Length: 117
Image 1 (tube, rainbow, N blue to C red):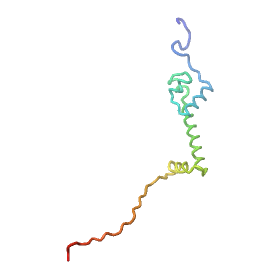
Image 2 (cartoon, rainbow, N blue to C red):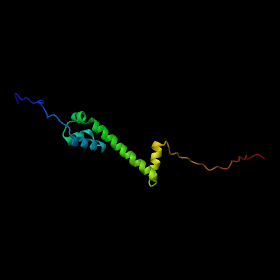
Image 3 (spheres, rainbow, N blue to C red):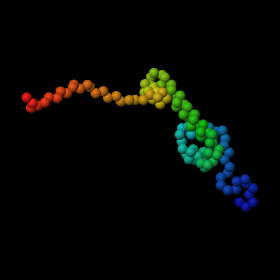
């Protein structure tokens, strides 16, 4: 278009993030979606995604991790999930499993000389 006074004459129009898109990006990042997939869903390039939603991507991942940690902690404390209690103690409490093999005490061997008078 000759004579066009558009600020961005080439490519897509400038992306303007809104609150709905910010929440959507944060949720998808928290669910573990890859950046390429998130960009595809909201209709922007990967570069535009990180330019406009970098904080939402970091925050979504952090919030999801907090929620999972909280759930694991509550399960460990509940007394209803012994496996989660052990998992928590191994990961956060420094506990470790050891394999102890006990060998029964063998009787002493007696050496008898054969052929001597």
